[in-house]
Length: 130
Image (cartoon, rainbow, N blue to C red; front, side, top):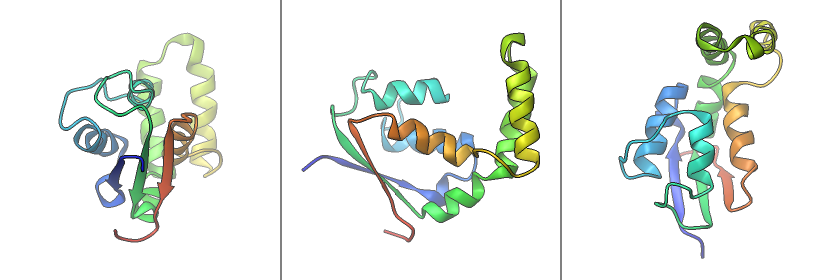
């Protein structure tokens, strides 16, 4: 049986809160870069703290899906616009335009997509408290 790590959707209400939960649950409080790219590195076991394969159960996922919806996506994209290099400025602006219209992927979708790219991680989405 694979080791299992459990995220709580009630504690993942912003992207920053998600990063904090990841730091606590997957890295036992160890510091990390707290970005989606660094999250990929964690899932690839490049931080050396995780087993090569594992299950990631995300409980209360409805709460996370709602909190990491379009409002959070707009907030994150506005932050990205402030710091992004000119080469991705237009792409980020178009993503923001879509999010303002409640279209396209949300922060929740970004996270789930990143996790699903890793064949060593079994993602389990749980709608209710565990």
